Length: 153
Image 1 (cartoon, rainbow, N blue to C red):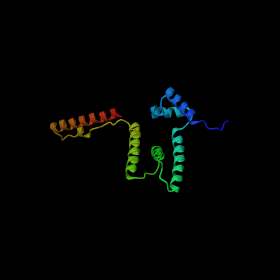
Image 2: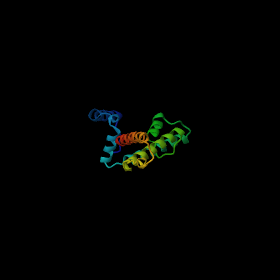
Image 3: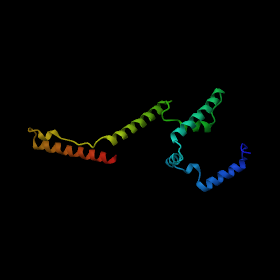
Image 4: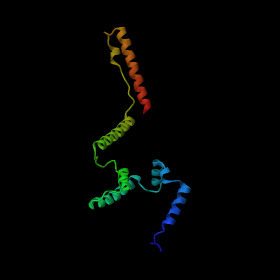
């Protein structure tokens, strides 16, 4: 009786018991779900790609028959669409570019050494005291801003 399907009533009962014990699947935060998958030896990205490929294959079967995609299938494809997929609209292109730029800037922020400013004007002989005070106040503002920006990272 190994290949025999369980009646819907029994599956619903098992699902209900699971949700009662562990909560609904919707209640698991994404980072915790990824951690659980990794602990089970499953790569979340590879799993997402396999699922997307499987759903895309099913979607192609609908399209070949000239049928509209069921809404849940369309939603699942949208949710699982890999970030590396070619953008379909200008909006997707902007979103993809923004994400890549953000990642790049974050990586650069972690690799750059703190900024150290040097002010060559201090060695100038022909500056008036008023000009030196003005330049010193500007230098102080720049220094405060760079310290503030460094603290945010």
